Image (cartoon, rainbow, N blue to C red; front, side):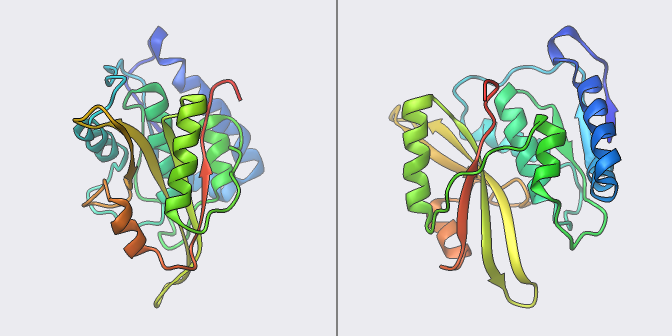
Length: 219
């Protein structure tokens, strides 16, 4: 874990918080904790807030900040999605990630959650299609005002690679017509980081299963 900048009263003590969590996790999950710690970057320099109503340009900028690599080759999508979700929650560029060691091996979500959010995030029930998942996101937005989510895709097979999983994000934006809509974000990609639901449907096979996770300060 690389921590740069300086602590300020408004950063929530990110430096001490993440160091404390990292020490705890390292005692219990040394190998995966080391991989996460070596890839995670924490900015403690005072950062400007993004607007409460994000634009597509804001979202692209945040996704680009999170993926702190020149050549992206590792399976660190879980870490990237968690970093972006954290930054969206605080509306600042705070966390970013480099490539992870053992690039073909993914990172366990529960360990990432513990390090970044201080607890394991609760997962939703299973969705068999993104259209149903999108309806659930809209309901959460209308009932609880939730705007940012981590989406986990599981149980699908990619030729040569085999069984796969992938984490990305979903965020509510306000369009030019002032209507709120779901925008998917994949900061793991080096291009087309804001895919449409049509593009995602073309990417994921019908066997894919989807789950929603989100962090709320009071849960």
